[in-house]
Image (cartoon, rainbow, N blue to C red; front, side):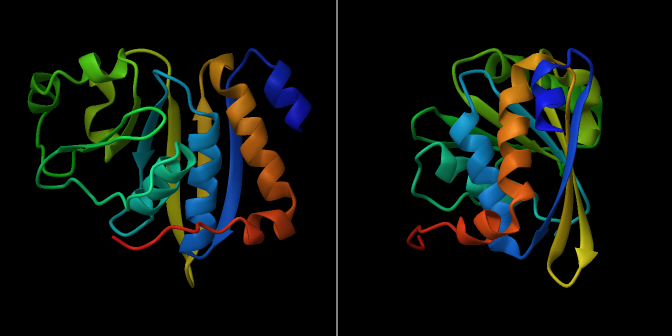
Length: 181
């Protein structure tokens, strides 16, 4: 299955299941380890689905040591690591015009990594290649993450994530070792 992900030039989609916030953070850590300048992650899911939890892992995978916090009221937070992480939250915005007025394309086309929570509110505002991440709460701290990309740029990243979570032992051992802020 990983071989097809890496070699395919069609849509790349994987689904993984996590049990507990540590595994969701571990999935994010893999994404962060494989992220490069200009990587964009568009997150969707209900309130409490685990979007910020996944973002924490991405930050840690980039080498950051902070806990990412939801930027619901400030809209964009910056975290400094191997690459700058721009963590955006569109929850409070009501129209595509408000989203476009933020000038997000400057971030998306820059040298950092962008993570956008509530991305479904601004689909028309996103330029360039990206990974769509749909997070579903399946009960008892379990999550279903469906990641899809429309370009081969993210194949290696999704392949690494698939490999990590194909082996349940390695996914459960890959817990974050960060101090609380």
